[in-house]
Amino acid sequence: MSEIITKATRDGYADGLIELRKKCENMAVLDADLAAATKTAVFQKAHPENFFNCGIQEGNMMGVAAGLASTGKLVFASSFAMFAAGRAFEIIRNSIAYPNLNVKIGATHAGISVGEDGASHQCNEDIALMQVIPNMTIINPADAVEARAAVLAMNEHKGPAYLRFGRLAVPVFNDINSYKFELGKGISLRESTSDAITIIATGLMVAETLEAYEELKTLGITARVINIHTIKPIDWEIIIKAAKETGKIVTVEEHSIIGGLGSAVCDVLSEECPVPVKKIGVNDVYGYSGPAVELLKRFGLCKSNIIDVVKGFINNSHD
Amino acid sequence: MESKLSQLDLQITACKVRMGIIEGTYNAKSGHPGGSLSVADTITYLYSSHMRIFPDNPNEPTRDRMVLSKGHTAPALYSMLAQKGFFPPEEMKELRKIGSRLQGHPVMGTTPGVDFSTGSLGQGISAACGMALAGKLDKSDYRVFAILGDGEIQEGQVWEAAMFASHYKLDNLIAVVDNNNLQIDGRVDDVMSPYPIDEKFKAFGWNVICIDAHDFSQIENAFKQADEFLDSKSGKPTVIIQKSIKGKGVSFMENKGSWHGVAPNQEQYELAMSELKKHCQELESKKSGGAK
Image (tube, rainbow over all chains, first blue to last red; front, side):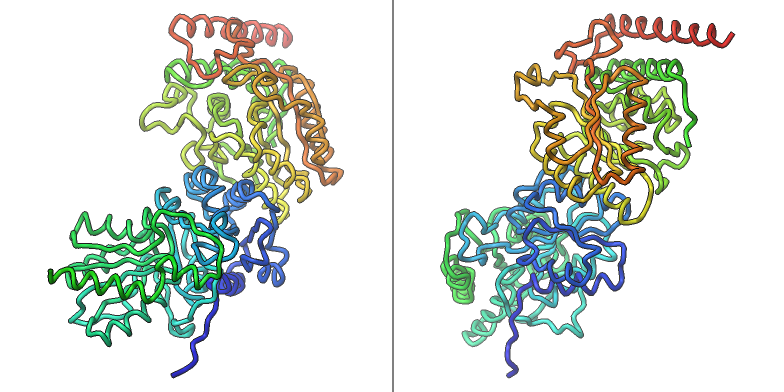
């Protein structure tokens, strides 16, 4: 077995920006004094003429991004998810999304895996906030390869998008040479005709789910595993097909169980194919300081909890 | 470039713009006549004599941009755009109605001539910074104008933008602060004083010009001075702080905060229109008298 490489999706963001610049000269990358952390500093170093630091003013940065985009530029505006989606929410809504401007928000340090900085910086609400904004596209890549590809796909995508990246280095399970990003399309990573359940995951929970899959298999449970990188617009087809074929769905996300992937999946199912769903996510609570991996475990965002939930869910039906 | 109009011509146009404001808000039975009337002269000057605009091709890339950061005064902008032929003046009667291109607050891409969507205060100035920065990057010589309210500058984002514009040397950005000293809840200095406005902008690294908002010679000189700052590569954005009268031009609306967001009823509409028409006729006859 080859050694598993780990890399943070924020590093994939930087890779994507550098690659994108080769195709698109008319772009601008903004940051709000977090360039070293969001990794836009990598882009800044390569293309200082296309990079603008806004200082610690996320609201103004989003407005500046909108103004730049109104002249035809492809603009990336970066900060931590908390300050991008949270603090600047209304500016994103009114100055970027309402006029449907071509601004891509590169939000890093999303979720509980921010770690030691604690709850003030652990944003588990950003997907919920961005979901309700008309015109907004939301992408939550699962690994650095997918992150890079998602950024490159922005060259063809017109309008606002929210790209969610993590701080923590996570397994790279996609092959950079063969991976193809299709906006709005879920990816069925594990699928068979005997699937007893479907696990739909997003972001760094996808790799964790793949590990859970292997262990469940040894226990005699074959699960379908779907990676939803585009949370909005969500892939109805793949979700309904899974519901029809497997009858049970578990969603896994590093986000609040309210308003995130789980809710989006339930929205689809309730309209088209209601089946039982268990949502794994942050249970409407704040996080706290600690090492990222330890926190993920404590919040149930880990292989063992996915296995427990799936087992319980399967057994429950035999009651 | 736009032909230069005499002060009398400007006064006549401003009077027509004001009639459009009254027409629009009366028919909508809502809207913001007070602040619209206070910026009417400045908007008239900019669109009639100063800005590079293309009514037949509103999105021409080299056009000067206008961001009405105090977006609730859309009736003034719409009325002016109609005067310039971006759309028919009769359309003012559709203001705020279902299916209308003239939304309650400006929407880019919907109304010809509207360069940015505004309405939530404090945001337009940031977008104007982005446009000005783009102009610098693209080595384009367009200018960006942003009109803010004096209440609006209570928003912290305005000062983020002020810092940004100065830091990036956006001398192609010309902001106007419409200082009528009235906001919804009362006098600006009672609600939350932004004064001294001039000293604040100076401290943020801007060129500051203070004028009377209803004197066309002062308005013209101010924008010419802003151009001189730009031509001399001052590297500083310019703000024109204009002392204005909320409700200017309609006697019973002047300096009354209650006219911030209330439309005239039929009686008030008729009174306002008769005042404006009379004023317009006086100016027209003065003009024809002068021509003889």
